Amino acid sequence: MNPEGDSVGQTETDDDELATFDAEFVRRLMAFARPFSRTWFRSEVRSLDLLPPGGALLVSNHSGGYLPMDVPVFATHFYEEFGYARPLYTLSHDLLFRGPQAETLHRMGFIRASRSNAAKALRSGGVVIVFPGGDYDVYRPTAVQNVIDFDGRTGYVKAAVEAGVPIVPVVSIGGQENQLYLSRGTWLAKQLGLKRLLRVGLLPVSFGIPFGVTVLPVNVPLPTKLVTRVLAPIDIAAQFGEDPDIAAVDAHIRGVMQNALDELAAQRRLPVLG
Image 1 (cartoon, rainbow, N blue to C red):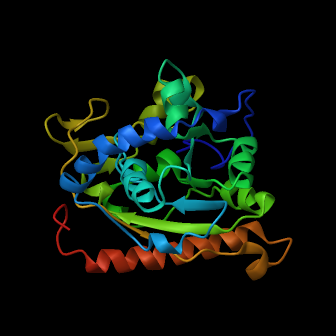
Image 2 (tube, rainbow, N blue to C red):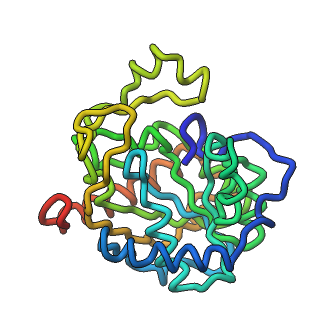
Image 3 (spheres, rainbow, N blue to C red):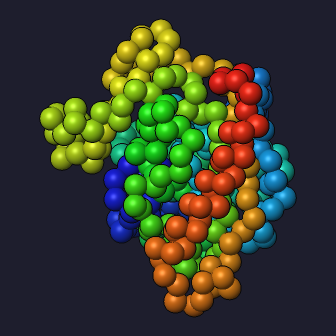
């Protein structure tokens, strides 16, 4: 969920964000989120049993526009499977923590996407999920909704190598069907100076309910069926050596994810309905 630059940036923070994770608070949130996930989105998360013990970096495609449901949906199934003693941390862009919601997000397990935070979380034995494509991925046009594209960002590979943990690819389908995504709006964002002001290089154009074609109001997400699949862990050192070619690792992971996403797409009968 890091819109600009590498998926795991260099920004450092003084606070120990991991210490603010509140298992009881998350338990209460999941009690609310689980029925919504299971009814409105009819969510499925497959092969959670492939997650290894200890620290692991989950690398996923990102879908859903202004209201991505990747994390809430995955979290409801993750905590149902593993309980609340094993935190799920989400690497997120600094923009999310500008305001009074920051403390709540930290309690939920959202942490700033810095190398320091990623390393701390992974070395503590935590499960960390990252969306390398960030906003470039989450606002991808409907025409390429089932394409794995991280926009050249490889910071996630470096984070896993430095922490000595496996990468677990994760793919999801259905989120980009919650409305019709027409354009990432790169030109419009540039004209408005959003990258300079907010570190945001996109202003997506989409069509949905109830506002129709829009760039700012949030349309109501359609009740599209969300299916997520966890893939086999990748031991980078074992497969690529102790000093791996980062670009080669990234290409391999994206290839594995694309094959899995193609399989999910082939199983899907109708948009939204699944």
